Length: 476
Ligand code: EPZ
Image 1: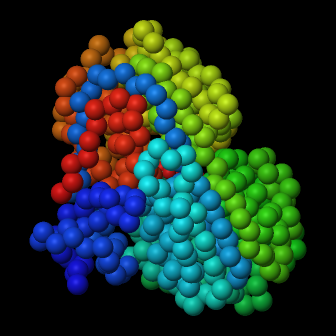
Image 2: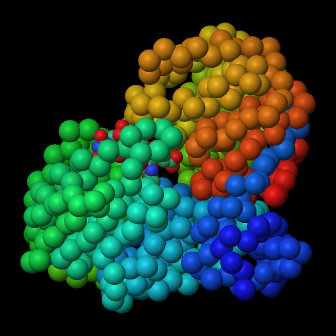
């Protein structure tokens, strides 16, 4: 049997009528792996992967947009709120989703997947069936939570359902310290007693959660998700003020109403929730990924070309697309998505600053910076959400970009050309900014540590190859 420290080489191979990533160890291919091994091997296997890009190709054709990672994760956690089956359609096939599924299984959630995507061009994702008939463990261990921060959001649902929870604090990451103080404010407002014990948050509400007033001093997507999920199973009314307005919050709220909660103010910064003492199962389709949409739109604006992004909606990222138009791209609505073109015109410089929705998304900041490296002038990008989200700057500089950092701002002086080089991915969105820069650069760019990419972009290289990019994954 495969052992978890076996030197696995992962290959995407035809398997049972579709294509799967399967490990080969010492020449022997394995098709069955104990789930406990998967995490370590998966990381070990993917750690060695690199992506090679030969730049200079215009992008032409269409790309299907997957379901939103940042909606799929909280929607999966919502399964903890009911003993009935929650069915989620258009689920993206991502490493973060797989890690969360394993964490939920640890709590006793049964889950099955149907409609595995045979190839990246299929417009619809996988369907997940999640059933938390009984919660068998209310602890979320460090070794799991530290691998996927959003799994910390199980805290509220576990306390709401079971009256207690012990969840590891997620710790910081490459882009910032990522505090959780507002999550705890929300839980206390709903009547939970909170202690910190050995790096774990221990929450208790033996009589269950009760409605309350939650006032967030800062806009937080995660704390808003956590409060919304917990309040849906709290007795009475909860009001959340200064709630995040990201579309993924609205998608989760919509699903919770299908499960029986009553939620007013969806899409606004004040949410009013009538909790229930039990919630039902439901079926919900995950909304399109606006960050994937914006990423591919910026790739087209960067290389020149004409691409239709299928299965997405402009209103999910109006500010980012308006910025793209200001740089000289054309963005038009199509029947089932948006069309992005840049033919012949140069890239105009544009200064932006990141803001909570509906402002310019921080998750598109690195991608926009890659585009600005080739603008016909100087632009300034200000990052107001995270304190360390410029890790891509040094890597872009290796390709010839001219970028100066000063505090929370970066000044980008557009250059006439970028030249391919070896670069290192550091976090999810920084990684894909290097892909965009590689598509623009002359010659070959090699991106190392691409496991960061696999966390949030499904079939990235296949989708880009499909519109003419010269990009391939080198495994092992
Ligand atoms: C979510 O992270 C997203 N992750 C992030 O996407 C995204 O960048 C971020 O929201 C902002 O839009 C998921 O949805 C899984 P926050 P989250 O709480 O919830 C501070 C990606 O690439 N804060 O909105 O962790 C915090 O330090 C990821 O897909 C507190 O001070 O972000 C930050 O400065 C990266 N106290 C600001 O709020 C708290 O208790 C916004 O963070 C919580 C947050």
